Image 1 (cartoon, rainbow, N blue to C red):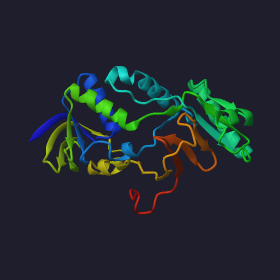
Image 2: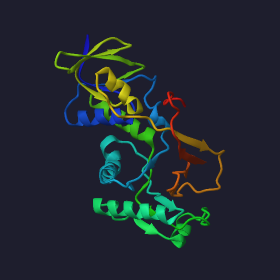
Image 3: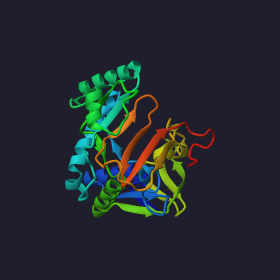
Image 4: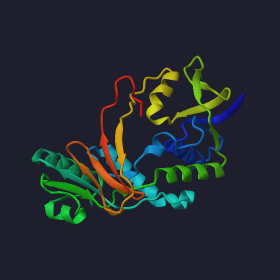
Amino acid sequence: MRSAAVVVVGGGVMGASVAWHLAALGERDVLVLERGPTPGLGSTGRATGGFRAQFGSEINVRLSLLAREKLRRFREETGLDPGYVCAGYLWLAASEAELGALRAALAVQHAAGLEEAAEVGAAEIAQLNRWISLDRVVGGSYCPTDGFIKPLAILQGYLAAATRLGVRLGQGVEVTALRRDPNGRVITVETTDGPIHAGAVVNAAGPWAAEVAAMAGVQLPVLPLRRQVAATAPCDLLPADMPMTIWAGDGFHLRVRDGRVLLLRPTPGAAGRPFDT
């Protein structure tokens, strides 16, 4: 039976990050299992590449500030450019209630250390994004250090740096079961490529994390949230450095990526078919 000190389930950006960080800390006997033929075919490859620290909860703001420092050091640590561009995030309010919610979030952000986030009025919004109609906009908030990243570049950077340190990658290998000892500790990972003895198992399956956890008898409250993305035909009507612009009321947002405008909106998942795309 094959073995690994640590088996990471999921070869997306989270699994790759875990593998690299473990290897950088000295744990080189790490095996990453990716059920797809290549890494990044799940959520990582479908991500729209936005990065922000403008959240309404302190823990999210602090986590994003830590992530921002990682992005700034990413090339030095892995050798690849994460594509971090400070294009900004511009939030728009169409009512006083929405503006109040943005102000409350700003207070949390400032307290957590995101000092550059600020409230903006109509004149400032027109300067930040002159392509937006201000007919129903009463105000907003803006953070210049938010912006864009390249998810697949980050994935590739972590995987390349991890493999240089000895991390192994199993592609096209699906986990089918997790076997536990009498004390409940996972000791064997059953896969489509045979069983693997594991010293520890890291669940990095993203939206599928609950399904993997259930194999170990753990109820994990992780559910997928469906996003709708419409990409326009290639055009130069909007600039690539336009800030990510979000309407606070319904979450509709847009950005420019690779010469196309992405029109995005969160929608409820379909009952019984949460992974239907």
